[in-house]
Structures are given as structure tokens and as C-alpha cells.
Image (cartoon, rainbow, N blue to C red):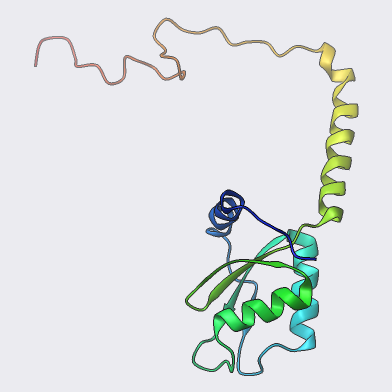
Length: 143
């Protein structure tokens, strides 16, 4: 089942993937069952992964490898640049865990909701961000 993704969604995933490091490499062995299984497990755990194709030694181009891995893992190819590819697959298990932790956090925070945080009084010398305005001021004396 292929996911129909809009350009904005794809751009958002490209932005998220920019800081990721490649998890796996496709080398001279090409794409085997082990790589497919590891990629499938990584997609379940993270949803968005980056892989690298060793262009000099791999029998497949980066685009071919991305398409083959995406088909084998039921994922979506986000981008392929040079020897680097980014894959995405929605993981319901990952989102269930987030919902459980959020619900547990709300339940734990309700008794503490009665305690109010004490606001720190603002100094007349602080700007809106809490920084001291006097620090950058020139010393008195005119020089």
C-alpha cells in the first residue's frame, strides 16, 4: 500500500532527515534479506531513516536501491541525493507509545497542578527576554 504524500509533507521529512546520520550502507553485496530486515526494524522504530549507497562498489544505483528497499519494506522514498537515500514509513507502534507516555504524563501531573510555579519578579533593568540591559551600556564619562 503506497502512501500518497504531498510536496509539503515530503519537504518536512527532508528537513527532518537533514540532521540524521546514515544507519546502513548498501555495498558490493547489494540488497540482501538481512539489510531488508534491518531496514524494516529501523523503520518501525524510527519512521524516518537515512541510508548510504557506496556508489563505487554497489551493483545498484542509489535510486534503484531506494526503490527496491521501499518496495520490500512498504516504505516511501523521500529523497535520493548522490549516494544517500531517505525512507519513511508510518509506524503505528511508535505513535501508540507516544500516546501512552503523554497520557501517563497528564495523569501524573494532575495532583501537582495545585502547586503553582512561583514567578520570578522582573527587574527594572531586564528586557523582555530577561537579559540585563545595563551590560551593553557605555560607561559614564562620555568616552
